[in-house]
Image (cartoon, rainbow, N blue to C red; front, side, top):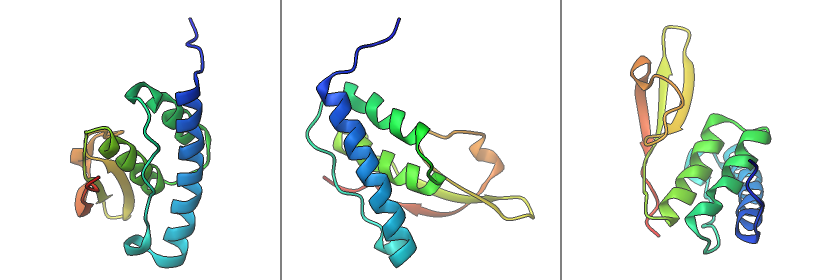
Length: 119
């Protein structure tokens, strides 16, 4: 059974698309300290599926994805840090939202955390 798309979900998807683009641009131009993700519009929590649809289908890095998800979650009362870590001697870097690891976080050595924004 496929859930119907509603206006809040579409608005969340549009916000996520713009947020990913801006985050990529900010990271390239100003680095990690210059990246700023605008708050999402006031939308119900179920619209999150629009955000997840965009970040799973659009090209993005794990850091861009984590920063956008962090902003969405913070706006919906679930603030979480972005974790930046490395694994092994090959220096394989990865970033994720602390509440949403997409793999075995224990395999990584944490280097940096980006605190959740306070909305």
